[in-house]
Image 1: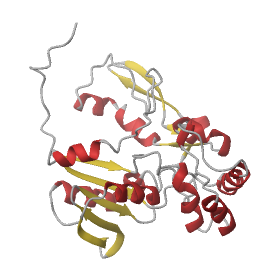
Image 2: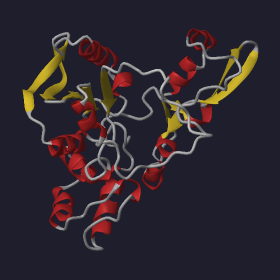
Image 3: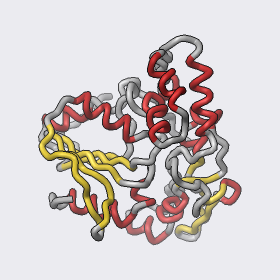
Image 4: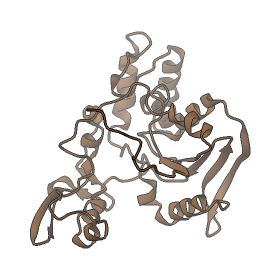
Amino acid sequence: MVADMRNTTKMNIQGMMVGNGATNWDFDVSPSFPETVFNFNLIPSKYLNFMQENNCNYYFNDFKNHSGPATCDAVWDKVQNLTGDLYWYDLYRNEANGALLVEDRMGMSVVAGVEKHYKKGMTVEEYTPWMAPHVNSKAVMNDFLSDYVNNETVRTAMHIPAEVQAWEMCSSTLEYSVQNEASMWIYPILRGAGIRTMFYSGDTDGAVPTYGTKRWIKELGWDVKADWRPWLTDGQVSGYIEQYDGLDFITVKGTGHMAPQWKRQEVTSMITNWISEKEI
């Protein structure tokens, strides 16, 4: 039976925000990683030069075969080994800085007198399993959100029925799949519909580096409406913004993949102003 969609509630979408999102696999994650870590002074120039001169390109989750001669593999492995002990989601952050360790990750809340048990957050290996051979992490990401969403008061405020299972960052019961086209296709559609779009990027992220984001935005070929400039919080530079015809691109300085968690004041101000259509 095909559902009748005519009476489905329509959402009045006014805008979309994406933070450090993988958008085009030809640019995001692995293809932009060597240049990113070189510019962060983490690998020597000879490795980057070799990869560029020999067209050594590797891709997220091996969604397509890497390019270049077989000698690329040894250099790619050296790049991975030199950066493997760093926190992939923030190359300048100590991963254990305030992070929960995996052995302490199980949580429990009581909802309507019933215990709800849940796994707090995810490790890097769980969140990005293709990185498992290159990282050795025991830290858990986003455990604070797990505790918040599973709190009985929060669940009640969100009208979540008591019989519904506890919330986890990524469901252990759903099957996830990777689209080869990623999500770049949605941006021209949103632009054509007149929907405001903002993409922000923590500029020390190694997982979805800002460098890759700049490359797919350039690929869009959209006109620049407002040139690159700094944006401030309490008189301090918090990042940079460039506005295109159809997209506002914003960097968050000195933080990585989870910018709203690690730069709360700055990102809250940025998002609030953007939603209110005020200058950032």
